[in-house]
Image 1: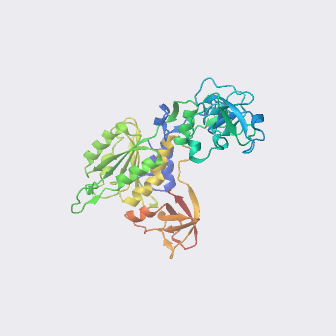
Image 2 (image 1 turned 60 degrees about the vertical axis):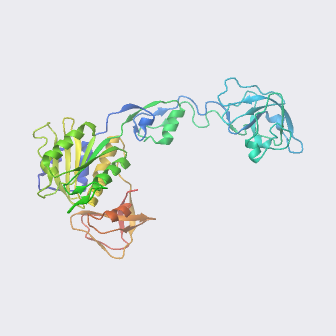
Image 3 (image 1 turned 90 degrees about the horizontal axis):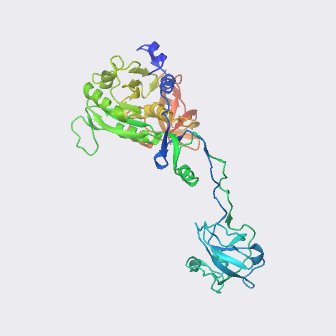
Length: 440
């Protein structure tokens, strides 16, 4: 699964953040395209350019409820000298055989209805007496006016220019225009456009299915009673939400106890519904680091080329990491550390780009910018480590929140950015310009 770099560095190699990310992105491949119904394609990425087969709108139509008229028949019309026109009937949206408007005539028309032959403009019903001979229609009376019967008359109190209140054929898009480009993520507006031009299905890369599981016998599910030495499982909730935010279909698996056989069996059970597996916890050097125990030999016994490589990264938080593949289909697996901040920062840096790569996107990274550090005292950072501190970003400034501890969930909840301190920097003074990863 991993590239040749994994095979040659050795177990004592200290990987950089960039090396680890490069290894992941060089290995993970976009999912194969499939044809999906429109609503099933929401959140997916197009793999084809979409050309408009029919103009929108497909015909000239009215943008108002009113009367379709000839311009010469209402020229100079005013409240003192209204134009009096014979109403020849109604034109409703979807009407197959529109009326023909001749000299001195008008057709009552509904919003969206096709402009009838002979008509050149639409006068809103508010500019008329609604066929009642009682002055201009306004307010509630305009909205409650009864349909005009053919053979009556309407008084028009204002003139209209040619094409007034008419939506021209093709004024939105024309037949042959490019509607959407390959690589577009389909949201509600894009799905609306596809439906409007008559596309019922599209060819897309499906949303990746991501299975998230946390490990640790001390973990208890929310709403359950805590026992001595127990804590609530927050990681699996945070990372499942983060996977969905990245565009994936995410499945959360309840915390797995510190037992290698149980974990291995649980992972194998999840392979059938996973395009990516993300575990959290059990990748350090402790006696109960079951992820390493359960998966370190996979690949030697199973499929050729599979296996999980556990490595140390020159970063804080998130030094212990694992990456590789598992199962006959070589499903990629990211093993993240168990501390809440470490797991979330690791997800943002490594798992999110992997998910976006599976989706087939070109730009898989969070946006980065430069910001001025606003704080009362200098930030310190361990030499040789790339540190990622939580912060809040606004108007070109970034302010740290919480400390450097990898357990500070409350501070993480306040952050909308990561402050990046390079490996060769041990202190950052207030007012210094720093790199910021925007999480929003």
